[in-house]
Amino acid sequence: GENVEQHPSTLSVQEGDSAVIKCTYSDSASNYFPWYKQELGKGPQLIIDIRSNVGEKKDQRIAVTLNKTAKHFSLHITETQPEDSAVYFCAASSLFSGGYNKLIFGAGTRLAVHP
Amino acid sequence: SQTIHQWPATLVQPVGSPLSLECTVEGTSNPNLYWYRQAAGRGLQLLFYSVGIGQISSEVPQNLSASRPQDRQFILSSKKLLLSDSGFYLCAWSERRSGQNTEAFFGQGTRLTVV
Image 1 (cartoon, rainbow over the protein chains, first blue to last red):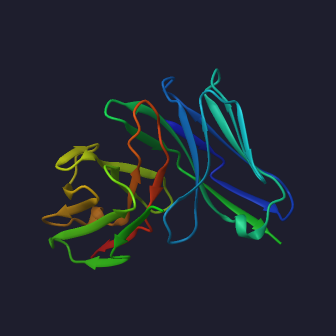
Image 2 (image 1 turned 60 degrees about the horizontal axis):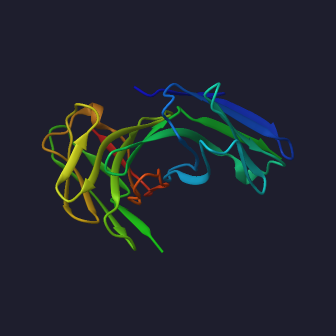
């Protein structure tokens, strides 16, 4: 089955620096790659996603890149702020019959942004 | 706009007691519904998904069951809880769209502690 590996497990940066989180997936049929941010005690919130027909997508300080050949995708956060501190999850999904998409998640990255 | 409600937020139950967690979605119809479990410091594991009323698929064998009595209602149950059932349970929904993966949106979660 699909497997998603995420690195690093923890990341500590100074405010204003950039943060990069990387994920690799195993199923070449995967075609949808969302990223979620989870704050303590809350449910994950979708922050950005990318589909397999796109190589890069940007939304203000957040960008995601996808390399389908290498089966890896990355989250880039620029000009980090203390409120970016959270656990970030990547996921990969392929489409099944009936319109059901099964998300397989990475183990998460705990990002700490220090003032 | 669509919203997802999940309750209770926290729950402490003795071993051997029954469980019922409820999730409802508003503002959409015929959604795909999901139950995930998150162990402490780890990623999200898909437990059940549903593509319609009464249609439940299980991803992993376990002590839990799910039901979908109404289009926008998803219930997670157990007849007798085990210590290993402790965790953070998350309900999610996604729009059913033929031929395309869609975003999944999560509830705020239920922290279950079995004592």
